[in-house]
Image 1: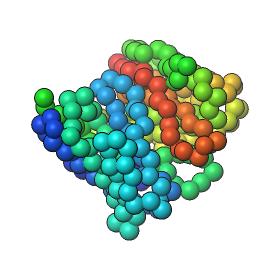
Image 2: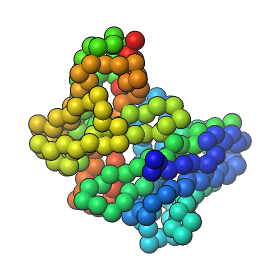
Image 3: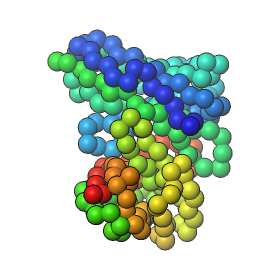
Image 4: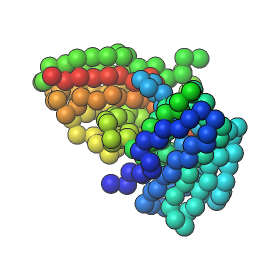
Length: 112
Length: 114
């Protein structure tokens, strides 16, 4: 399977702490994205990083990409209870359509 | 804008029954997708469409059919439901125009096959 893998699969932290999630993939990619899924809801796009970028920031989110190691990390700083959700990486490969492959997700619990 | 909507939200089927899941988007997106989500498996692509009248198989297409007769709608059909098709189904759409690859998801349909 070409599915990406997130690590850890589950993470529990206290409010205010930082949360780091990692994603590994097996193929050459065009871009990598991170999505959030609240319980019982659809996925929401958080951030995209292209293969020629190494780091990207959006608010409290910081994403890094290491194409030589085929890995990415998502850092959420100063976590809040509202950040409790599952986080998925998804990567796109070059092609004629925007098909992405999703990882299995990291379940984050932020304890107030 | 409603974004991406899915009908129905929940459904229980008996083995062998058929049903159609409807996805509608009002963002004029060219691309539409159907995924299934199972515990520990993440999202897996069932079928996708790159434009009105076109469909293609994804990673797990067996037992499903799709149609895209109108740009805004993408239908997923189960002709003879099996317990292995118990899952949460998500529809998504995206646009090639911006090159952003961002997908917009519907709220999901929880299907149970007994």
